[in-house]
Image (cartoon, one colour):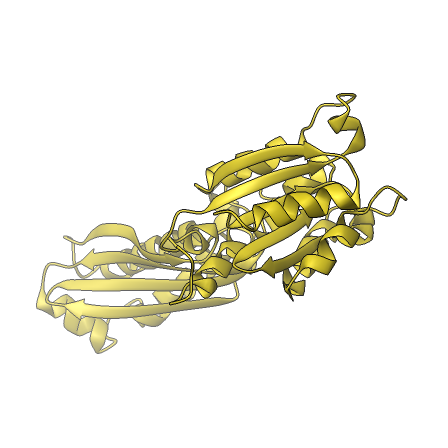
Length: 304
């Protein structure tokens, strides 16, 4: 199965359809009036659909087992066609499209099985996804402007050429995948004066997002939070909480990280861990949802 451990759980919904086409109005009447010899077609098929939704991972090899938290099976009759609709909700790391289509197909197959003694010309048609919501595809919607970012690596050893940066490059890759332009990439020492000078310069430019990586731990040289916090005009503690919560689920020591998030003017400033894995997981924890900040900031006074 595909690795989804890097994903966060969100509310996800899917609606799927199947069409059961019969050959006569008599069949429709028998279904509606519950006169089919095998029993109540709608109710029996609904029960089968509920079982199918919960057993999808047992049938489809690459489907992840997930908690099905809501399932609805509904019907609509149009002439000689019975439309089956299955809606499924979950709060999980991956969507429920296959679960909805699997359930819709089983509902249709159950109807076929129950109706075949009275109608020899039944067909099942158009099993398809009607709607899906949730996950990053919803969060990554356009915010109405091109975003420009700066990535600043805070490290004495990297600045001195003793080590090669990996964390900053991972952050840039993540930003590019979200179509956020990285306008500046710099490496500076772990020094309050250097960090503050760089940040003050960047917020006077057309940069929307400044991401520092490194210096958020507890060693004597880790001073990035001390440098950034005095310059922050509005803190966004929820971003910091999301980063630590996400990391804590993966590495117990993530609680020691001192990530920072806040606004200066119309610029979002983030301070992320300096380890490659810490930076990558922090980006996964908050993007693309954090880009909603810029939608909120849009307005008559917005500089662009």
